[in-house]
Length: 100
Image 1 (cartoon, rainbow, N blue to C red):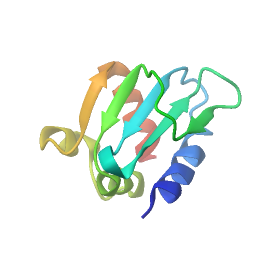
Image 2: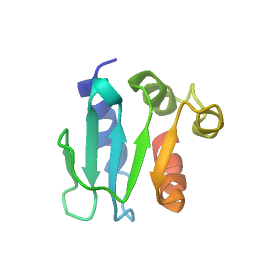
Image 3: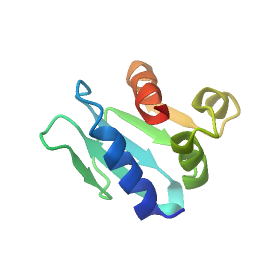
Image 4: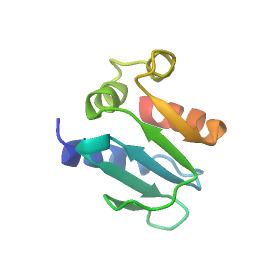
């Protein structure tokens, strides 16, 4: 799994997130980041570090597991594999979008 493959998966998931109007950052530390802005149409998805409403910090491996359905995001959060900064409500909405 690479940053580009995870970015592509997130792009696909965000096309299904019609009602989501937010700026989200997926921070993978040294592995890079993905910024998603769904307040615009079409959604902006980039690798630039911009201001976000919510930041999810984890490894690429953890997010890939969430996207594939092999990692429960709630368990990842409790175990400290996933950290959330910002709106917890938005993080819960993302949980539903990313798991589908």
